[in-house]
Length: 133
Image (cartoon, rainbow, N blue to C red; front, side):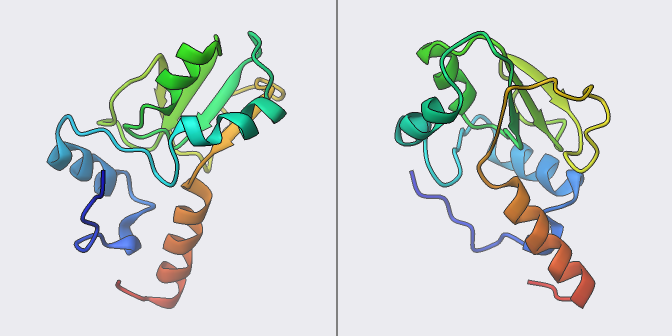
């Protein structure tokens, strides 16, 4: 599925209200950034074996990746996203990934981030330089 991103303003990617509005606008549409789990599965399994070990998915949004991981055998998946509107999957917490103090040290055996870091860095660069995309 291709998404029209022509109206996206990357300057707002670090803002929860941007993502809330985007998810409301998209309704029940689901979307996986970059790759679906089926394409990433061999790499994820290489670093995070199929066990009951806790896994954190950062910036889960409304993707089906965690659901696919659960179907594949992962049992303890925590999803976090800055948006309170993103569709809850399995275990879900609305939070800003820039402050992970909610979780004690060593809470997870694996952390998956498909795009949160790059989106945040792009937003930060634009903000620092006053660029509006």
